[in-house]
Amino acid sequence: MTTKYRITVILPCYNECENLTPLLEQLKEELEPLKIAWEVLIIDDGSTDETANLLDQLQLKMNNLRSISFSRNFGKEAAISAGLDFVNTDAAILMDADLQHPASLIPEMIQYWQKGVQVVYGVRCSRLTEPAWRRISAYLFYKLVGKISDGPDIPANAGDFRLLDAKVIQAIRELPERSRFMKGLFAWVGYKQKAIEFEVPEAVNIASKFSLRSLWHLGLTGVTSISSLPLKIWSYLGSIIALISLIYASFIVIQTLIYGRDAPGYASLMVAVLFLGGLQLISLGVLGEYLARVFEETKKRPLYLVDQFRGFHDQDVNNDND
Ligand code: UDP
Ligand code: MG
Image (cartoon, rainbow, N blue to C red; front, side, top):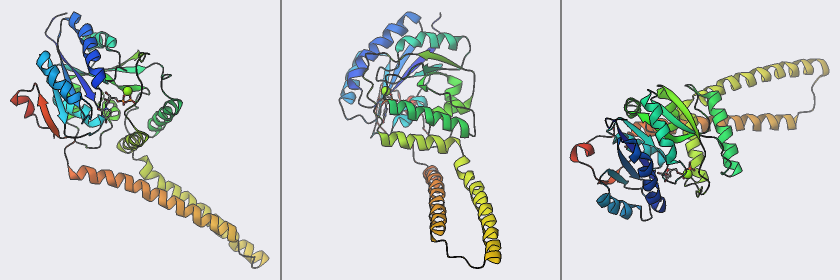
């Protein structure tokens, strides 16, 4: 292999202080023998632990390290976007900083990339180390999203562990939307993609930084950013219900004509009113969900704010993140 390739490893970090040092060791072990030029770009997503101090120290020791600290926690999707904004090499590898993504997979990713594959993504072959509710909800989510997606399918179990060619990075940078569901965007851009399987290393602490609430929001962003079906379904459902009530109305008219006036049907009336009221509220809620996202987009706020750059030269920092 020659040294003409340059690769950046992007690490989004939220309170990963104790994992960073071992991870950087692993990266060195895997990348040094490949004889390529490589650097690490760490995005500190408003960590509240010692991450910022550690980054200051690491900066003095490593000459192939750059890092960014956000002004607060903006979330992993924003951290990944920032990473991609500041990459200036031929390819980038995105990986979690919590040691769940084995660095030993990187040489294989790079091999595929050198053969011309533009996106090499890791797929977890088993999620057994995760709690059952997360496995099941992830499974159902990808099934649902796969069914209703307006664009290409999102591969199930594919995480954010992936190698991206510079062309793909450029394509993603040019996507203007603010509400970002990275997995959806990665699938949407296309290019030559290849999946490779990996096992989450066993000794690793698998506690997730995502609360149930943030997973729910990510899920909603996922659905609303890749599909407009939830918006369209209500007119069909409404037409079906209107048709049924028309049939029912003619049934009542005929019944009254033949048998005379019947005792009023309190129960059926209540059920119909409550059912339709519920449906209307749901459809309003769905509209609100999309409208809120349109509102977010029109505000045109930046995806993240940077408090501190380390190891950057002026021309890198001026890279605008529109
Ligand atoms: N992360 C981040 N910002 C957040 C939450 C997480 O940058 O608000 C980072 C985190 O430090 C880790 C990666 O995203 O490197 C994956 O997070 P986590 O392990 O919590 O997610 P999971 O493995 O459950 O998908
Ligand atoms: Mg994790």
